[in-house]
Image (cartoon, rainbow, N blue to C red; front, side, top):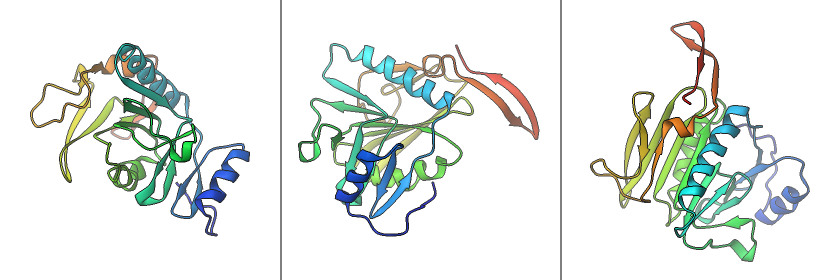
Length: 212
């Protein structure tokens, strides 16, 4: 992600500009950063996951938000738009604004080449300052690969990696992982109708289709 605005903006100025803008931007401690446009794979993965989650939580006390709901992180003075968020119970709104929430339990980001490092490092660090935040999924859109971080204690997180050899992403069933929600999601469902094109393998290009 590239910072294109050099002047300092207040959070209030950012919100005013964002309401009138034709595209979404993030706000990071005074800087406004335009977000890269999403790809078909990015959209398909986020939609697949949100659909599965929304159906699974139909009769449970969880809420699922996708894409357009803004998250405010007070300790990092950051506004961002996670790809998918899961909340336990009711949303906590910032200043009674129904488009800004404060209390996600699980955050999901679909990785792209331009944001992969940022999502895995600086953004994850910002998310960890949220008291309700318990689990983080990073889903690769160029191959079948998911990193799942689960909070196990104060300043303690475990990492579990999933790829095409695994049948499911599960929030339960492996040692030392915090059980954040009683739900299992298969890789096949996440990557349904996703096509990987021009994937470089050993310096050569190959066409690979996603699961499903």
